[in-house]
Length: 545
Image (spheres, rainbow, N blue to C red):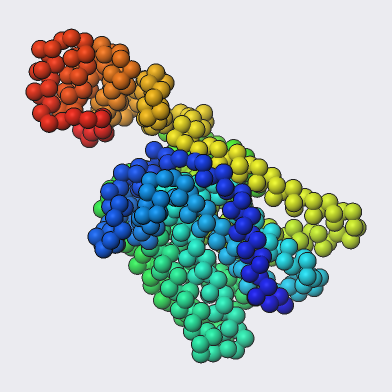
């Protein structure tokens, strides 16, 4: 059996490799995809004091409607150190993810160290066993599906949650090993309470880890094999505090989401059969992209109508699920499948509070089990081959796979470089009104006003096809009018502000139309608009009708 103290170097090496792979993310900027709401325009982050702590623990996140006090505090700490320099925020995300990759190595060791004989006695060799652990950590850490969680500053919630969630699982494995070995007292109580404490902390980063108690039961069944006739009551009783807090957090999340209006939008408003189809398609995509991580999109929203291909993919997932549950006699396959599916359940269409069809960030915790199982399978294939040259081929294949992941990850990071590259990628595969609008905002900030005007025009065309509400059109006319005004096309600006005012006579529109009229020399009309504008002035802002 490998001593735990020998695992630390493997965990550190894994973390360092992940850091190197993700260094490119330090050149990425903030995105106008939620980063403004969470960080850039968040005045509460400017002062790290008691008022911030009180706010962090009493507010809910915009858009998602979730309670994330530890994530808020981590943003504030970055702001204290770096100001609004995106390098610091990205560095924190990279460090957190690197720690998680190291934790996967340690979890893999806790799962495999006493079960080597189930695979092959030769696994205990000084090279193969550490190689299996290192491979598990790297399969998790540098897989291209991790890019969204690491490079998107808003998704700090996911990587921070990952640290505490993985620590909770790790210490639970410590506890279970102590119980099975007959240890008592401090050797079992301390890991137990640490596991429970880290679970609670994970909730405060992002409530996605409410499924961990169920994952622990799966681990008790296999590979820990703790669920036996004489122990089943004790094993279930151990989980009571974990399930209590998980159910409480779930209830709080649902309540907060409802208060924020999240439950009334996105997938929540769809018929049940459509939720089934969307969920099946999402699982299919997660499996496919895990095996072949090419063509990962930074954002995929629910299409209307739902494509018929989603039904085919959903049926394929249902058939696969039935085969695994009924016909598969190998417990490791069923356990791996459950450890993959359970963490995905809260973000499927049955429960989600947004209009995202599927997203790479949702695979963060589910991928841990797949990474460990994948590493073990590669080692078992290596051991099953007796020919030396063929073994070299398998080893080369494993190394090539990691290199492939690293290259694709580098390409994927480039998509997240700034709002322009991000929304261009989205528009390439799924053009819709909001994507053009947000890329238009980026072009305005970059001084590319003609490109912004073109995107705002595309946004208006798509908004009509998508049958968006009138207030949406007023805003786009307003933003395009501002772009025309800044570009010196004052007559076009006046016409856009006329359109915006007809829909919503907001003072800010009068202010900007007055400025455009003044530049055209129409002083009397400009003065009238200035009077109507009152104290309204400044840059265009989104205005609710």
